[in-house]
Amino acid sequence: MTTLKPRGDLEAISPYKQGKSDLADHADPIKLSSNESSFGPSPNTIAAFKSIAENIHRYPDGSQTELRQAIADTLKLDANKIVCGNGSEELIGLVVRTYISPGDEMLLSENHFVMCPIYGRSAGADVIFAPEKNYRVDVDALLERVNDKTRMVIVANPNNPTGTYIADSEIRRLHAGLPENVLLLVDDAYAEYVTAEDYGSALDMVEQHNNVLVTRTFSKIFGLAGLRIGWAYCPQSILENVQRIRTPFNANSAAMKAAAAAIKDIEYIAMVREHTAKWQKIISERVTEMGIKILPSVTNFYLLDFAENENKSGADAAAFLESKGIIPRPAGSNSNTGYVRITVGLDDENEAVLKALAEYMSN
Image 1: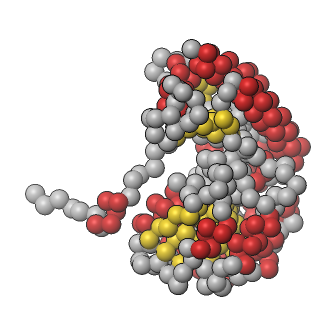
Image 2: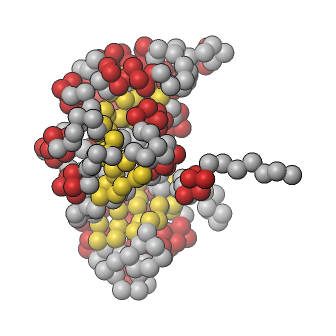
Image 3: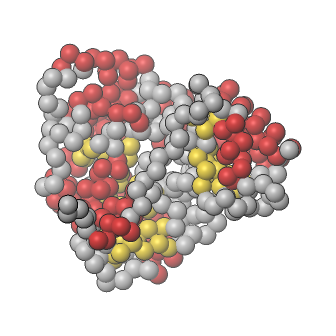
């Protein structure tokens, strides 16, 4: 029997592996592996989600009018430049398919959203990685790698898995150094968490340039990860081209209804942001006292680096946390250079993590 074979270049693509969701020995573990909002959606958002129940036999609004207008009204944007999708990752994939051809180059920072190289390679691109400085996107390193084959630069700001960010002035300097035929995609997935004064979303750059696009998601601070809903803000010319390959019902009715309510719930989002910033400070101080290196994060997660801890490793720390019923996200190798990424949870969840880490370090 003949076996069907995929394209030869697909063999070089490693499929995405999601973080753990359960533990065999713990019926109700603390899940801090996927940067979800521990608060979940607001009451208003849940009510909006339930309100659509009797109409789910109808197709969604393919023009996404209600959600696009809610986003535009809340953030003072042009609704005609917004497109929504099945999470921001679908929109990133659509943009890659729209603008990348075989033989083109896609440029990413060393630490990047893991789906980006998958999308790039599946489109036939050569994916180029620029090193970082102190776990931050290095604009100079990116610009040094731009050549006549470069078609797209994707930067997550803040970044994942580091939690670091670069200032608004650096994003603008990056764009200024790019040729006009290179698209800059800025992934703003964690933008709503940032309180740093020198941070700025690239949303306003979309109004000024034809080669800038911003993606955002409702999966993080809005607590809608399970509904898979995100959006992109882009110049009209880019939007028109993406619409050529977007499926007509790529965003479902329940997700759009809930998201339209979520983005209007300003006080609820402010509460989640303040809680997260408070705990980032507490966690940073306490793990530093334990002798663990923690990267400065402006998001709802933090990255622990065990490279400087003799006889300790990220893999072992992750395993110890799991033994206590806590699910983190290990990263790196099994050696002392391993990392552990942990989501900021509720008060009791954060205290449980700190207690477990202290016990691990004292062993």
